[in-house]
Length: 100
Image 1: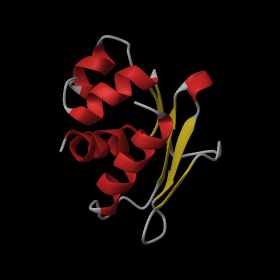
Image 2: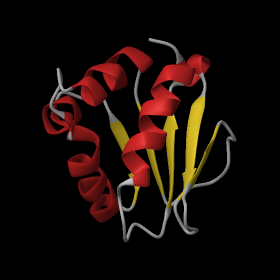
Image 3: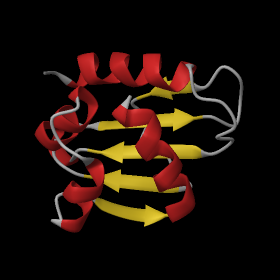
């Protein structure tokens, strides 16, 4: 799956999420980034590499499995497949949005 297709899935999922009011970055290393500014409504989703309240770092492959439901994000975090910097409360809130 490409960065563009993952970005579109994120757009769909974040459009149904309410009350986030934060910025989130998914950093896939050399494969790129997805930046979500949910401080506005509707949330904007881009490939800008801006500072965020919470940053998730993982491979595009791991993230694809999380979004598709093949990988539990909690287990991926405990196994070190995902690194999180910033607001852990926000990370937990996103967990339920991404799993749906």
